[in-house]
Image (cartoon, rainbow, N blue to C red):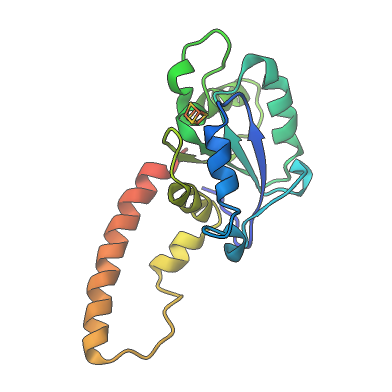
Length: 185
Ligand code: SF4
């Protein structure tokens, strides 16, 4: 999976969602979650973005627009599919009015010989902001840094070292399981 190794800029595209995912996306920018502290920034143009953040099941009538938007994102690009609709169509997975989410978009790209972007899936209806942050952190390659424990800088005592080792092993187990769930093809 190709991931960004720096701060990531994100273009948010609602492809036919009910707006609840979008409200939670906006929540990421508010002071409680404040994703800009991780270098994650919403941008106004796909031409400035590393990540296309997709909400909604991709309605048929916006499909061409989605393709044009995806094409405008410079390579290497990543799609972060937010919500059950984007992850697989949600309750509209077999509706005549939608293509059925990002997996179907990837199939169509393959059929047309268009290179497929990396994808991170964040399921939920809507997903919690924390899950969205985790998905974006996977796209930004922050998780592997944390797994390498790069952000621990203190000189711990022996007792603290033992505690840190226990916490580290627990965190690695949880992150491994969560990464497996969230990573897409
Ligand atoms: S996943 Fe749920 S909350 Fe998000 S757009 Fe679909 S129906 Fe709405």
